[in-house]
Length: 166
Image 1 (cartoon, rainbow, N blue to C red):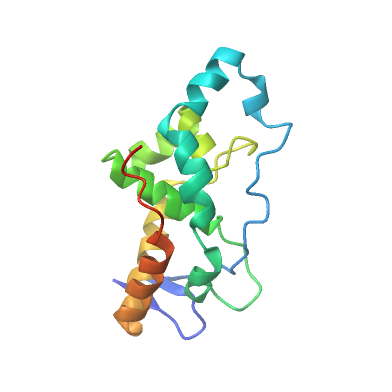
Image 2 (image 1 turned 180 degrees about the vertical axis):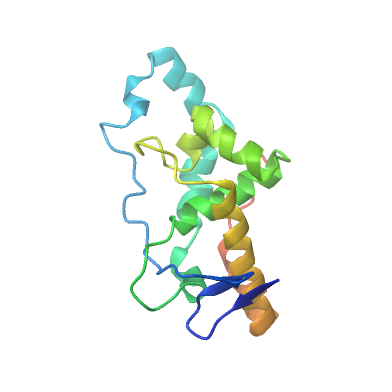
């Protein structure tokens, strides 16, 4: 069972886990990321893939600040960028991946790295525990607070132009 403690830590079993909220300020791709190492043909294929639409339309629309209530106010280890977690969870559902498959595909599939703006990361920021702990935080928050607020928050995050044509 998972509990959200008064200071927004989560209690998993007998272990309290603290994470402070830190907004992802480095979500733009840089000139030094691995995208620039692709051949022109590979870049063209990537630009025509689903990852381009996701990177340009969906990823920037994920408002991390809306999820700050899930994290501790006290100084602690900063969170994995929330927009990367939420984006990964969307991709995970789109392709029907398990958590382990999502983590593995993020490490090995450049399209997913491109979609989540992690091509410049030295090491990909997700683990299966990152995803499960995020879901635990959401569940604990939803259980402790009005679930409608979280649903409203998620609806606002998902309120994008219809991208079904892609």
